[in-house]
Amino acid sequence: MAVVGMGGTLLTLGIMALLIHLVTVFLPPANDKEDKP
Amino acid sequence: MSEALWGGFLALTEGMRDLALNGGPSIIMIAVACVMFYLAIAKGVEPLLLLPIAFGCLLVNLPLSEMMGAEGTLRTLYNMGIANELFPLLIFVGIGSMTDFSPLLANPKLLLFGAAGQLGIFLTLLLALGLGFSKSEAVSVAAIGACDGPTVIYVSNLFAEKGQIPAAMVGALAVAAYSYMALVPIIQPPIMRLLTTKKERAVKMPSPKGRVSKAALMVFPIVVVALTGIVAPKGLPLMGMIMLGNFLKVSGVVPRLSAAAENEIANVSTLFLGLAIGGTMAGPQFLTRETLMVFGLGFVAITTDTVGGILLGKIWYKLSGGKVNPLVGAAGISAYPMAARIVQVEGQRWNKHNFLLMHAMAANTGGQIGSVMAAAIMLSVLKGLGIL
Image (cartoon, rainbow over all chains, first blue to last red; front, side, top):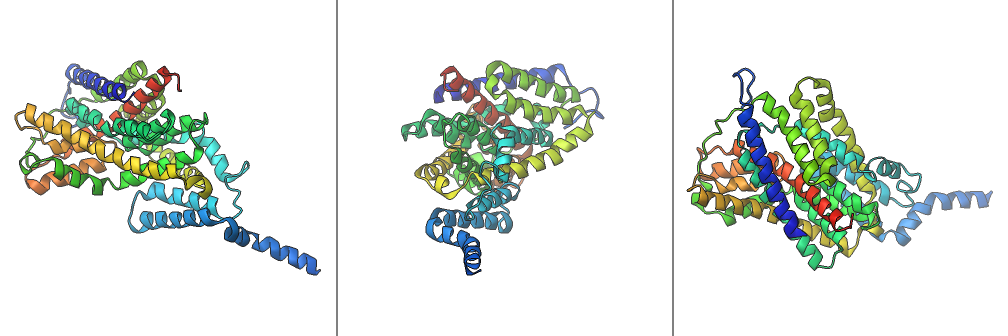
């Protein structure tokens, strides 16, 4: 249970990190006024 | 006449007699409430939560108190928002609204620290099972490693409402979780120094250059919720509420709702949740061997969370050729923004020109998501095992 839990958490967050990265790549900041650092 | 006077006298002193005859555990718990008052007021230890919890604890332990009886005020609050997990979820809407995920979006790979920072949950789970706790109790205790009070209350109450763990254990778990969260500034720095070298602690990380668009900030909560729903639907209420709060904020079109989530909803829910949790701390049910073990295991959970984050940081340091400061890994827990501030202070202690805050904030918000995801995955695994 613990191994599946830790493995599942790592894997899911890894996928999530990848998806977030893709989101930021495909939705880049349009201009400086709209951007957030 | 004398009988009436005597009867009246007996009625007025009934509480004192009850306290003297049966009040041992209650007196101890009243003392515990006073310690919590002291910590919250004099030491500033999580006062938002500890103060109402301590007051609830005091109310329920006074002699002949009916506050937690079938019609009692605290019982009503408990039934309104703890028994059905409503209060922790409402607090999550507020947390989501207060959290700025843009440092994480600027550097998404730091989300992995948020996964490593959950190591304590799973190590504690193994330890609790080894110590003879049932699966439901072990998962509830392990949830303290989430460093997140509402998550602990939500998870443990799922079992309490099915009678798989005693209701008093929910109170013990909540107090342990909030106490250890408050102790993070004391617990983390020695572990950080123990596991890293001076050279590693002094690594200077450049400020993140990436900027994040408003569209990305808005898509982010949708992506997180969708992924949670697919992978671990049992945790969707937790993740759904935190992301709802964040979505209200980043959409920018409902400032009133966002402000209400951040202030009124979170404040009222916190007050009621604290009082109701304090109400579960009646001496005879609370003072058990299991409660002591909960506090011991909770400490293990919190410390091993930090160890997990730093160990991943050390691996990352090696793989990156010394470009990643392993201290950032310590921020991969849910104690937000406290853990990030500790990393910043500790990093500057060893290199005055170091500015780790934005990286630590990214790891810290990753820890928030990681803790909820870890809880969600555990709940889904338990459902798969037929326990939930």
